[in-house]
Length: 180
View: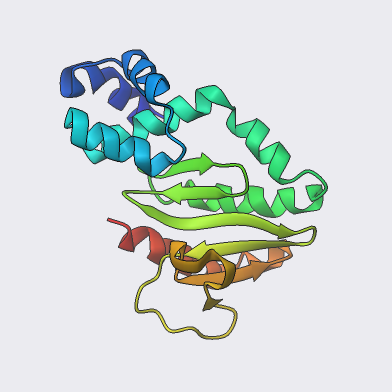
């Protein structure tokens, strides 16, 4: 666990009125289907700020099913894509301490204040990387969002490590910077 997250958890009782463990109990009683529903509930019903609400919901989910388990299930039969996934995560972690990596059943959301990248193993040989890049031209390998719909504005299809190049990193960084 990184230092910023540890500090946030330590400050939680003072800033929100409850410890992380107490918030987990509150969320368990409600059991929300979607991440955003839990965040909205904490913000509206308990006046928790977005950053704390997002952290509480994320850490509550991680307890129910570990991140590693979700990643393992996503890449079952697609293990050849794991080095590509790892390379993406390695770069994304360099963007800032405010990045939250949230594995779900079929994809991994990369969140700052809001989701800015989505990583999804699309086939046995391809990862689809979705971006939130409003007002960015669709050109070359930066395609329209395709199956991501409104969750993303653009998509890049990746099959090899070579494709995690400076151009791709520039788009990821741009999406990160716009997600404030």
